[in-house]
Length: 385
Image 1 (tube, rainbow, N blue to C red):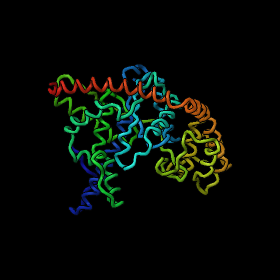
Image 2 (cartoon, rainbow, N blue to C red):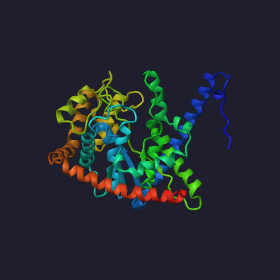
Image 3 (tube, one colour):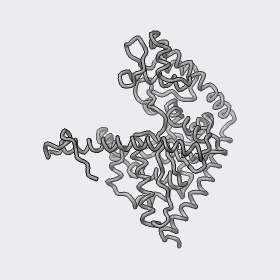
């Protein structure tokens, strides 16, 4: 099916700038269509999951670059717990190899991995129902990277948003180019998902291009080596019911920016964080995400912890202003995180032995599955000697 560009999008010049603008416009329209389709598919998937959760296996995880923060909880962790509690099989990867994709110093990884694991367990992830493992402990998973790399082109990797943005940032910083590990990151992610035959991946809309590489790898492997009986699933995106959480400086909450509220923070630290949160000069509180992003962010956080809506919370605060809003949100977050923080302190006080046992069990299960998958891949590729 051909698509006719509207007159305003048609190129008026063959100059490189005009062609780049046209390409950007096409990419934006394509991304919008993909996002709309993913949201529609997610609505269908939620119904299917509710009826038969055992048919789904989720792969998700985090880079262990520090303890998790409020943005992680609202953006991903709470949704993982929800899926686990529905009966979906959840695999959680602590992606330690990804720490070295863009940095020379990985820090104290064992300590950081334990901090992430503490946050997972305190938030409600159950190692008896979910499998937590680390990249580096599963050699067969990483070996899948080699045949998978043969299925994609360098151009496809360079178009990946993460790879593209890091390459541009490296030029601006006048640093050396991106590492080979970062260039192959999208395919490494495909190996993470496909080694356990994950068929459901919770993502934000901005992460859809990452998942598309995984779907491409699965499809091409099946076409090349097992066309009559496909081996790998093409995983679906489950658009997370979340929003971007802003840090104390009004930018997206991030460990690297130093603007985050860690889940392990004290109640006093929590109060300080919200006192410093950016607002605006308008007195009356209204929920207008486009016009008042900082106020909307506080309303979304408060609403998620009180079980109400941002609009209802805005009406409740009304003319009392930003000071009252911050007080309401602080109280909601402190009370909401109280059980998580108590559980985290309890687990931490028991020492690292329990955490190491949880990880050992998860690593053992991941290894068992990865070795079986690698054996199957070797058979399908005719590489059994």
